[in-house]
Image (tube, rainbow, N blue to C red; front, top):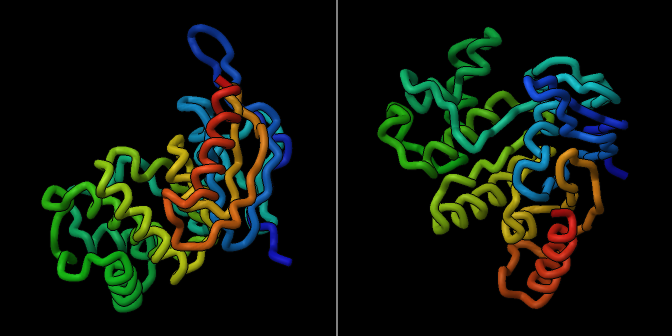
Amino acid sequence: MKNEVIVCKDVSKRFETERGVVDVIDKVDLTVEENELVVLFGPGQCGKTTLINVMAGLETATGGEVTVSGKKVEKPGPDRGVVYQTTALFPWLTVMGNVEYGPKSRGISKKERRERAQYYIDLVGLQGFENSFPSKLSGGMKQRVGIARAYCNEPVVMFMDEPFGHLDAQTRYLMQEELMRIWEKEKRTIVFVTNNIEEALYLADRIVVMTNCPTTVKTEYKIDLPRPRDYVAPEFLHLREEISAVVDKTL
């Protein structure tokens, strides 16, 4: 039996705005196991990003609690890495500088952090670009840097918030394949947010379907399709139709 790494109990989140109180998350119960790749899937703007921000410690829950490895989440920590849709790389740092930034800020020696950073740069296929600046990289390459940077901190959990959403279709498919390759080699517990059903089915061990805002868990699907997955396989298309119909009803 696998260990429960992330546990959300009765998690709620509301924001105070000029127009009044806005409830975004409504009593979410969710458990993610060790090395599991869970996709949060649901309508756009339903609260998925806010939920992973609460799990990552970037937002504070209004109600309930989140634990990671048994410890209550109250603030960000190196045990939790985040990869965003916009890569948020430091433009004044090279690829190497960006990837080694986390270990450097924690005081890890130059030799150790450089070796670790080089390993992950190689892993994401960016060897030869160590001295390049972000402005010289394509969108897909920037996301590879973002993934390498998150892995270089060696977090227990990685949160990925629509990391391929701004990429063109061909690059998006390529990055999905790359993420699977990296995940198979360097297992991590991953929570991945998307509103793209094909992406969810291609990546997930389990898809958690969220309702419209204020979001809560509507239903879950355990995805037992063999990897690498075929977008046009009958089983894939059947699940696509079934899950799409469930999400459509939440709108």
